[in-house]
Length: 393
Picture 1: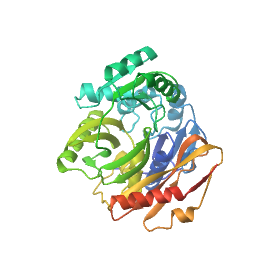
Picture 2 (picture 1 turned 60 degrees about the vertical axis):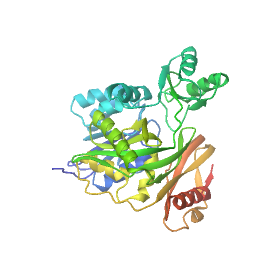
Picture 3 (picture 1 turned 120 degrees about the horizontal axis):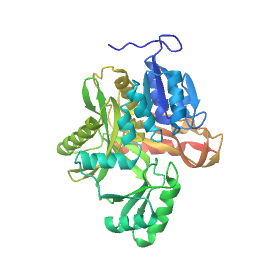
Picture 4 (picture 1 turned 90 degrees about the vertical axis):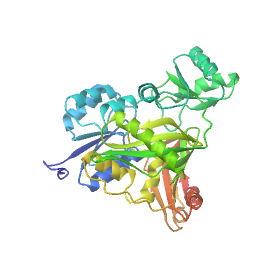
C-alpha cells in the first residue's frame, strides 16, 4: 500500500529530479499534485523544474562526489533521472545501498549513451536495429563510414536534441560530419556512432509504461525531426494492427530487459510492416508532450503514478492531437514572449512556455498543443499557434 506524506513536514515523501528541464518540470508538477515533495537538481540555476519545486540545487551532474553528497543529505525516497549526463556509476552504487532509482540505475547507465543501449538491444536481445559502428578517432570514423556505406548518420554517443548529428552523403562530407559530432557531444569531443541510413516510411515514439500491474502502451506518437531535433508530434499515428502489435512486442521486450517502473520513450522506424529499433529513453519523451492535450493522463502523470506504485486504471485518448515546438534563435538571458492572444485564439489549443532562463543559438522554449477533427487539422492548428508566438530575445 502506498502512503504519501506532506511536503516540508517529517512525514514527507521526497522525489529528487536529476535534470530539471521542461520534461522534469512537468514531472515535478505531476508529483506535487499527488502530495510529493520535489527536489530539483541541475547543472545550471533557475532551470524550469526548479521554478516549481520545493527545493533546488545546482551541482555538476557528472560529479559523483557532489551527487552522492546531495543524495545523502536529502535522503530522497525516489531518485528520478531526467537527463542522460549524470554520474550513472554513482547511481548504481546508491541503488545497491538501498536508494530507489527510476526506473533502475542499470537502465540509466545503459541509456546514458547510444553505445550502451544499442549493444544491449542488438547483441543481448537480438532486436533489429540499423547497421552501426563506433569510432574514437577521425581515421576510425572514416573507415566506419566506408564500411556502413552512404548515406549514413553520425552522432556523438552522448547528445540530445539532435546536437552533433549529421548525415554523411559521400566521402567529401565525412570531414565536416566528424567536426560537427566533436563539437556537439554533451561531454565534449569523443566517441561517435555511425548508423546505416534507414529508408523508413515513418517513425514513432511508443510510450511504454511499466507499473505495478504490468505493462501499458500509450497510443503511438508520430513525429517529425530536423537534424535529429523534434519539431512536431501527433497522436495517434495510423498503423496497421500487425505493425502495432510487433512494435509493442519489441518495446515490451526492451523495457522488460531494463526493468523497473516508469515511462519509457521507445523510438522505432517503420518500413511497410517492418519495425526497426532506433533509440530509447527511460523517462518521459519530448515527442510525448502531445499527451498533455491528447489524453486524460499525460506521460508525466503516468510516470508519477508508476514511480509511486499507484494504479493505472485506464488511459483515455481524446482523438487526433498534435504538438509543435516554439523555438528561440539568438542570444538572451531574459527571453520574453508576445502575441499570445493569437496563439491561443482557436478552440482546443493550448500553450506551455518552459521558463528557460537563457538562449544561446537555438533552443526549444515552449510547445503549442491542439486537438482537431483529423491529424492534419490538429497539426495545422498547433503549427499556426506556435508560429504566432513572438519570441523576443
